[in-house]
Image (cartoon, rainbow, N blue to C red):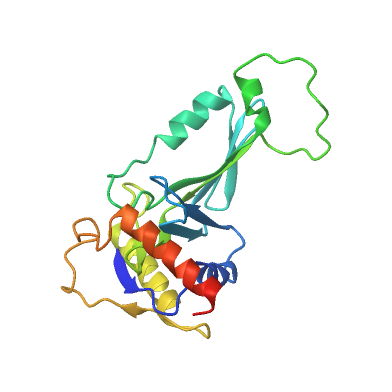
Length: 216
């Protein structure tokens, strides 16, 4: 994990850089605790595993190969999603599964009549595992690059290489760059105290919006 000052970086700017590398990517905004604006923005790209849920199977794509798990689809999906776990911390998402569960997923749980035709042949659900992320913490004006070790899959050396790639992406390029916080200048992402409470942060954002509307 490495931290950078937000400086000229924006979530959309970083997302565009990642999109230039791969079209398998995401940008999520996180609103918790009644906040009116997101505290966190999460950006990920190039997932290590992609799974697609069908009525009769779970399709798993990994390392350029695709295999079908023909067990009950939800049972296979549950086992796959629980195969990798990590510790919880201040940042609510530092890697893992991102995707969607479609409306018709309920048909794997309940017997519903009159299933409408599917002209597009879409799976019930698609989920992808992202082992590295870029996280914007808007409350603390910082950007955090995260690359995870995965036991039996991603060793420390590979994670370090990926972290270096993310650091390069955040500090170089025509869109401007971030400024890396020197080692030792912070204790850890989990223990550094917040400068504003949730209520103070919301109030500051509202004041800023008023100033913008007033033209100040």
